[in-house]
Length: 79
Image (cartoon, rainbow, N blue to C red; front, side):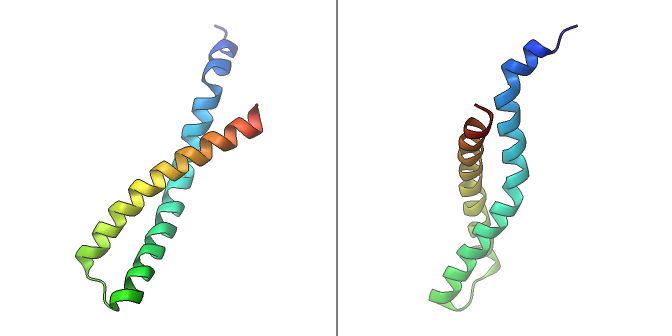
């Protein structure tokens, strides 16, 4: 069985998914910390419920950011 055909077809999507998944957790944590610090500057105290909301917001933002960055990176490096 020849896997080279499948490799060339799925090369870019595979690397995009792999890079996005590796970057997701550190980027989410970084964005969440920045959101919490910004909220602390304005309110001084951030409740646990607000932190959960900010964590969801950071998760959504990091998914979009990681996919876009991975797509651009893979296109620049491999093509």
